[in-house]
Length: 107
Image (tube, rainbow, N blue to C red):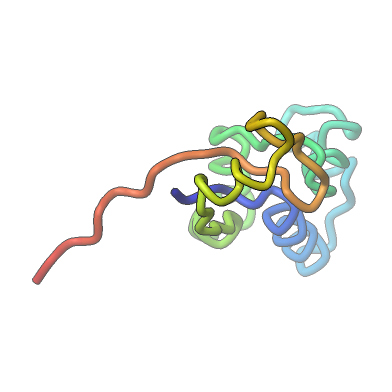
């Protein structure tokens, strides 16, 4: 299973902000979100909506893939290491959303 690493995605957003001389407040205003929400996204504290990712790509004139970082996770192993089989709580370093990538095309 693949997951989105929101902490690394936030770092990517921060990098593009710096390269374009934008503050969190300025970027938040362009995206029509609060500065607090912008801070939380940059610091990997919250999931980032696809609409926001698409807005960032449009603002910075770069592909969506430039923001999003993926990681492969062994779900069975992760559940084995959690307490009593419960899903582990997310931490800042592990804020992710589960999804399946489509199969790669065969040639």
